[in-house]
Amino acid sequence: MWTRRYFIKLGFLVSIFNFVLPPINWVWAKTRKILPFGFSREILKDMHPEEIDNRNLDIDPIEKFGTMGTTDIFTDLNKYRLNITGKVKNPISLSFEQILKYPQLSETVLLICPGFFAYNALWTGVSLKPLIQKVQPEKGVKYFEVKGADGKNVRIPLTKIDQKKVFLAYKVNGERLPQKHGFPLRLVYEDAYGSEWIKFVEEIVFS
Image (cartoon, rainbow, N blue to C red):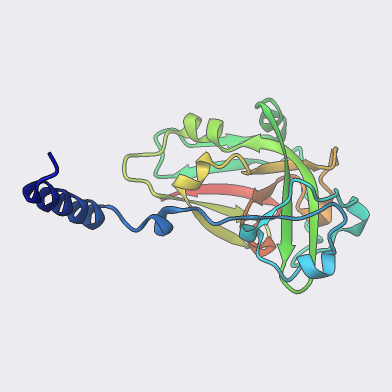
């Protein structure tokens, strides 16, 4: 029976629902623009990676990759170590050979240095998840900081670890990562500008 009392109760429930939950457009994720094969890199370099779906973009050859920042750091693999420290129960120090023993991950990710260049590439490396499981961050840890031998660093929320396109790469387009692009390890960081793709990674610190 559709009574006046029924509609009053219904209106009350709707008002409570709207108070507890945010407007539906607040929770919708940003819609990414699917770009076509052959899309202009001149236009792409002025776009934000968060806005782009790169599934149809062509792969750029390494020879066309631009560089920013330090490019001349030489790493002796016999001495190289990736140190993972900070607020963790089991800090570790891995050689490059030990890193290569972890499961390999390959993802096509777009890198943009705004106003300078943009390139789409197939990056191969190691996921951060097994490394985190190994070191066991302490309760309350919210961030991890990736540091490079060139003094650059980026602080990333631990929640980002669930994104499969945030990892450490040692190959690009099937070839060993070139020195000027950050060998032996470079952070691949989907949705972030190239300035946050730390090169020559040598340390990860949890805080």
